[in-house]
Image (cartoon, rainbow, N blue to C red; front, side, top):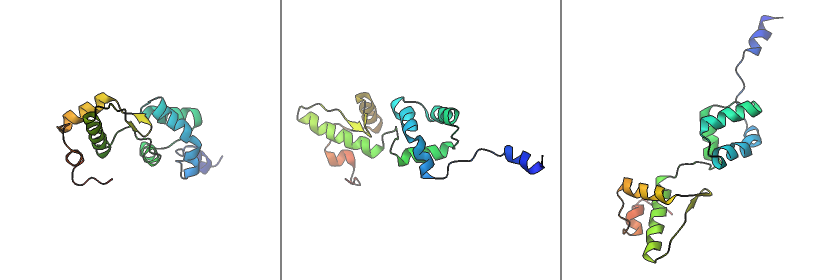
Length: 134
């Protein structure tokens, strides 16, 4: 056996380079990360164990963002929710909100309002800020 062959077997696993490679695992990643609410390290570990698919955490984060599977609700999204909720409450209507097909817990909205010190009686422009773009 030549030295070169022995070194080749010790080479680290190849990281995915194409979108097609990622698409093969998209459904599984989405199921684990979004539907089963697993943490990213758990998803990475399970996909690697089941399929032998090796990618860095940074690569996963980029794909999750591209696929719009983010779990966190962005500041501008939450401000829009607070604004709509306030308007609907003034009309005496209750609301349920969804961001990326996931229901937003009312406690999460309340926590955001408290943390950002937002007055729920404010008008839309005040909640969204002058830089809001719809």
